[in-house]
Image (cartoon, rainbow, N blue to C red):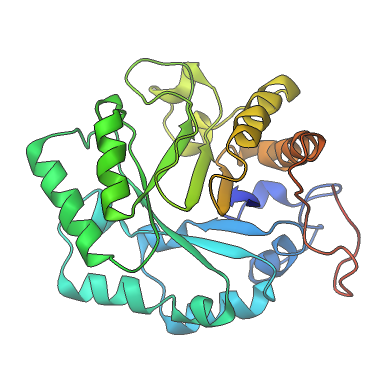
Length: 279
């Protein structure tokens, strides 16, 4: 099992500074090239707000230098508005082609909101979405507990969809923090456990303001080690990017996985463009 570990997005201004990811003075246009020297996967957030064009994806492939896999988040028209046009499908499917050609395309991510309940209409919509993305890896995150059922995962297996296993705060109404497998690729999103801000936080930064302890990373390392050999690839994304929490947690998980015989590492630190291994 190949494990890819990264964060939700890479354009974080609070990662700039001494002993952080981006040295002081780093321009946003250089963020990805630095990020790719330390992490072998990234979840692309910008595509949720506006689908980048071919040239934008060409730039991502070039700046990441083949070191980093991209999980491309579906635009909100697919998951929140749920009224995509044919042109939206065409752009969402065709624009990332430079990533495919560079061999760094990971799964698409459909991040549905909590308001997306398990209703007949939403089940039909999900089936139609799966049909339109047939032939492409599509990971689906459900935030409402109503979807957290064996028969739902059986349906995902039937359509070749990837169940996104989440680590949410211990609050009512959300899926359990269990690693489920529905495809040859597995997908884990670690949101942090800030139960006080999960419902009341005014921003994603507030909801994800949480730094995992080593014992919590050991729990997930045990779950990952348990499924070793049952899938080909596992993507692990830390969403607690605020205040640099994810930057501290990723080395903790790497260490825990290596201790359990799951080899994980950062991209080759001997790259001539790397000024020093921060982690």
